[in-house]
Length: 315
Image (cartoon, rainbow, N blue to C red):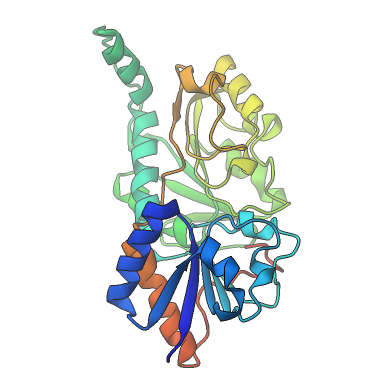
């Protein structure tokens, strides 16, 4: 199909050069335009691959056939009041992202289990801080909030390390070896059994501030927390209070609101917190380009687009 154009706003100039090289190998007939140039020639754009376009910018592309989120979430796109809702919005939900999330989740759980933050502080200070880690994986139940593609992969990989895994979601799910808890009424019982709580929920109005003082108090004392979904899920001031009081023995946080975490925030230096810069599951540009190229090829053959954003579910 001739004259096919995709506008890209993700990763700046260096990112665009890499995107263009990837797509040249995958779909030579697809022309890529940097975002600024696309906005100067809006009538020729068929597809958009974007992370955080400015308000109203996507609405300026009259020929737009599909929008691809460049990252796992589409929160920044949905925040645009002028987002063209009639254009399909495709989430970057790919197997490579789930594998990376599983790896990161296992690393985070083991870091809490083996007190990696304490070890790192001792090494930085040149101190031989000998202690005996009190727990092992098969005695620490991991509670996964969110049992979609990411949660399912995390569950399987955590089980491979010996962790018992239970799950909580809006509706019941069936995953091998994972006891499913569903709905608001089941949340307190789920939390009471979660020695390590992992949040992988989508960002919706219902999930905002779901990890707060009230829910943290329902965890076993000395539990660990791993925040991998969205910064809107947890109240940082409540996490700090729980860490200081010992209700939480440790936390690994990859997502924040706002991002980046402001300089000087107490979490940067907290002795029980590991802070990472939202890197848990983002696939390489080559992996993402392959997903988008396959989706476009199928779409142009008349097949449905994968992983469409569903306004009714909020993700």
